[in-house]
Image 1 (cartoon, rainbow, N blue to C red):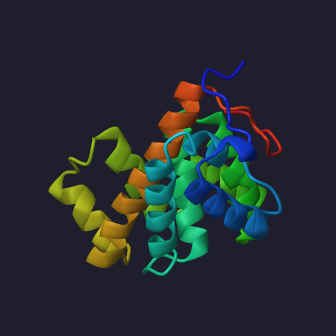
Image 2: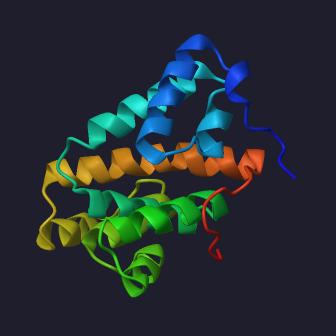
Length: 172
């Protein structure tokens, strides 16, 4: 049972409705996580702004999904694992790739994501150098941190709210 209910579209603030309508156009529906974020229109707006900005950054869609999967696995977010398993498949990751990304083993981005979360960003010099040696530029490293922050917002919100999963479920 959800602890913070997804807001019905009609009950959201006008500005949030505009943003939710954009999500509906893009995905074909309004996922419960966004309807839950709509309780705080500023939080919804901030999430969408950062997400859109990062979509134009150094990391491609596949790498952003790797961050989402690794973050959601570490943070135990059933909702985000379900959503990003679907999106990762659309970005070209196989089922085996998705499992590997969730475990933080798929590539340098997955390893770095897991290390950032598990150490609260306090990586050793050797871990940071390993990311660089694996081909990650400083721009990519900063964007991994930003994507981790974005995912932490939704992971924590969904864990707290116990958001009803409206994507094909996966096991945590």
